[in-house]
Amino acid sequence: MIDTTIIEAQNATREADLRRDYDALGEKLSRSGVDIDAMKERARGFSVAVPSWGTGTGGTRFARFPGKGEPATIFDRLDDCGVIHRLTDAAGSVSLHIPWDKAAPEDLLAKAEEQGLRFDAMNSNTFQDHAEMPLSFKFGSLSHTDAATRAQAVEHNLECIEIGTKLGSRALTVWIGDGANFPGQTHMGRQFERYLSSMKEIYKGLPDDWRLFSEHKMYEPAFYSTVVQDWGSSLLTAQELGDKAKCLVDLGHHAPNVNIEMIVSRLIHAGKLGGFHFNDSKYGDDDLDSGTIEPYRLFLVWNELVDAEGTPGLELSHMIDQSHNVTDPIESLMISAMEIQRAYVQASLVDRETLAGYQDENDALMASATLRAAFRTDVEPILQMARFEAGAAINPVLTYRASGYRARVASERPEVSGAGGGIV
Ligand SMILES: [Mn+2]
Image (cartoon, rainbow, N blue to C red; front, side, top):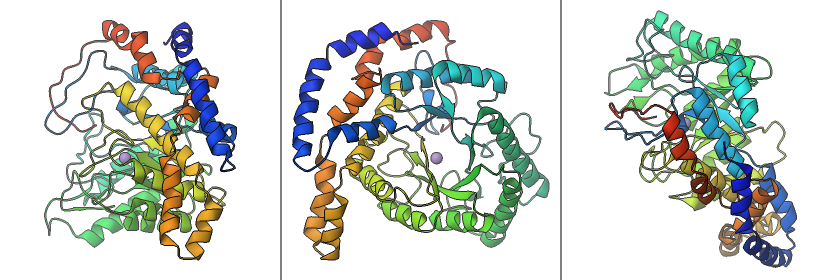
């Protein structure tokens, strides 16, 4: 998809500068006892899952403005994911969305293998109606008042598990749009009970080596209350279901100014953190590119995760969940994967022994400064060298533009209509 000679030619124009920058940073870090090569290896070991749906142009509920060369099928989407991974070496897996990505499992596996990709968590969809399902989810799915509608939603989730087992996936993420737009519309207690009993049915169908993620979201599409509104409801769910049930934190699904890193810490404490949907936001669930609005918050989340490394039972699925409305989705996803990787490496630079000492001494100023010292470190040469040594691009976006990939697929893929809104 991206010719190796293009990557090599592009890297050749940047290699000398990279080596100088890397050596200079290595010398600087060594003064603090940090081995830059060890940091580079951490960067190389990093991978985040790309959402298949993120490769198409998203939209708001007002409109969608598709670009040229939009992926038309899941196989196009996997091609685009392959490009993202080829150039960044930081996005080796894909999170599928059923039924949008339905296809013969053997064909999906063949395409993934061709692109060097694996399948991460499966995502079910009961927040819209589907042609093959007779009952409507307009008034809810897993928590619907009608038992047959709940059963249809459970059945769909079980099908997602079944498809996933054929693809090597080991997790199902459940997010529902269920809730209420008006006070009094639903009985919040009974609605939650119905949700829990549906989730128990799904949990029963979970293979032993799978995990079930419950994803909370404060509002939208239900604007007064949602069934799994916050991390408390998500934790209650995971605790009631059992060991294989974990909480998934989508960074955009909180009230403004909520301390997400503290939620992360609490879920780690409870043994219930399962994974992330990374994105960034200014006001609500904006689904903007990771690290573009509040990079310090992203760093602070990673600070908790690096701090918790080695915690027994802590196994995390890292996924991106964004909507790209005004950019080329491939470029946004590459930038996002690299920004998440950057926060991870920066958090790896935190001098934890020194930090713990300041915390014990109640030296608030120096404790805070210790964190910020890591955040302020420009780790770009580490990320670039990790990519370069992996045969990926020192500068993925400029290499992608030089490759002409988008223009090429635009000539092969059908033009897509922008009619209709739809948050994707
Ligand atoms: Mn999400």
